[in-house]
Length: 203
Image (tube, rainbow, N blue to C red; front, side, top):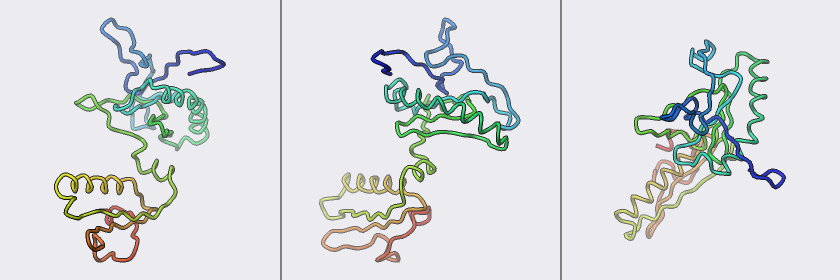
């Protein structure tokens, strides 16, 4: 982070690394001591109701300057989270999802990786993030199914269509048209129209 021309180190509470120590008993970088206590309001999970912490997807570098800068300026949300909870104790989880990929969650909680040491969660792939980050849209997907698209090319095309559909939510409308010498709708009963991108239609 650059402030008034000086470079300084900024450490945050990484939800995976908090309270973790190395072989010498020292806290890991980004893993400082973080008090966690069971709380009835949060299903008796060990949480910290005075601080949020930050989860970074496994496939992203947790000290990337863009991540660190975003975490730094979003730290002011701690006070907002605590004040919100004080004014409305019925609130449960509060969070902020960044376009850079980090996820700030209140109350702070320890995240555990799976058996492969991976945390696949990425807030940018969640329905709530996609709906908040994008306006409703109408999408027509054209897929080349001519002879040149056999084998691996067609497999990649299908996977690409599937990935596009995963980004669409209930507020979006779409249809898929395949073409070679002629055009035809992939689903004949949906000819000539756009349909809501709900789960049933996407399947």
